[in-house]
Amino acid sequence: METNTSYDPSFAREVFENVDSGEEIKMCMQCGMCAASCPLREHMDYPPRQIFSMIRAGKRDMVLNANSIMMCTSCYTCQVRCPRGIPVIDVMHGLAHYAISKGILTRKDTAVFGREFWQQIYKTGRIDEKDLSRRYFFADGIITGIKKSLQMARMGIIMLLHGRMKILPEKKIKGIKSLRSMLDKAMQTGKGGSEV
Amino acid sequence: MKYFLYWGCSLEASGVNYLRSLKPVCEALGMEFEEIPDWNCCGASVSYAGANDLAIKVLNARNLALAEKKANYDIIAPCSSCYIQMIKVNHEIQENESLRERVNSILAEDGLAYNGSIRVRHIQDVLFNDIGTEQIKRHVTKPLNGLKVAGYVGCQSVRPYGEYDSVHNPVVQDKLLEALDAKPVPFPKKIQCCGSGIFLPEMDLCLGLVRDILDDAVSHGAEIISTVCPMCAMNLEMYQDRINEKYGTDFDIPIVYLTQLMAVAFGMDLKRDAALHHNVIPPENILKAAIGN
Image (cartoon, rainbow over all chains, first blue to last red; front, side):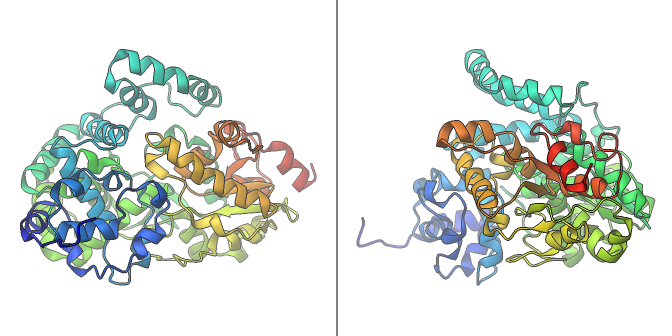
């Protein structure tokens, strides 16, 4: 544990400028309600409170490599309890997006799953659950893909038998071309996230 | 009363029993639905991995704009993730003029614009506030006779805005269950998250969350668990085997949608309207015993 932490504002500035909702951490008073509220708190290396403090202390690598920023279940418990009204989830998602865009995949499965999810929306406008699972399983190559598929095969068959899987592939929405140009424009003009 | 029904991607696949039961129940209650033309996915809770915030806002603003162009009905989003994504962007656009202009400059790619005139509602909100429990009671022909139900609220159906129910101690689902003559059991984990959209990639961690929820419901006497979210339903129902294997537990409790229970209590067909045959852990026997069939 470092005892003489000096504050380095350069990373905080980077976060305010480039990370979606990053400037919201200015309101944090370090009470720890977010950490206590999180369903996955036991598995996090640094809970949100600590992440916000580390941003101010300039701990760039520790923050961007923290497992917690990619572990948010988006349950909004921290957010409704935060006495300073910080949209904690938006900040965590913003940090995760920023880290992933820099090639940091601390929770690789979650990052890959989320990216596949987004790519499918970009491709067709909608999500095809079975196709999403297949792409996610095979994102790491064919061997891992077969292994992961076999682990989930029983569940897949059960769902198919109970009519809870779409047989036909998802068709593209009619406005897919214009949707894509909208999303391209948003990705180009928004920040790592966007300013609000 | 007319509404847009934005059912989203899951309700056509893993959550098909939600959509199939919701439609006849709501129609019986006098609601009429229109589809938002050419709607797209809401982005759910994991798109941030690939998209920035503005892109996710645009995704939802497109749906809102398409709805507004067609009619001025409220949008009902039965899936909690669709609901939270859409209501969040709606509030932000309504409250922030510069954001609205910015989003509209992007929607203009397809000649669209959103002026912020639409209301986004959860199905529980509409059932409780527009229809009301008295009206629902009048449609109950096969009361559930004190069936002990754990009404699992989860997270995104009430948080963060709490537009129609408390974010800390929600009661609406329990009141709706009471209107069917079911007996909602108190269980504190009813607002704990099940892992939601990251359940699949973080399964090792999330199995523990679901175990805690199931354990809380069962130990408070629940015979069945109701839910209003396709992710909750999936995560609570499909992984009970794995949980039993991992933790040495013995869970085998049916997970049904609130609308399925309503269809049963309204005396509708158990297959065609209540869509019970889509459930993997069969709820038929428990429900037939409750209604005295």
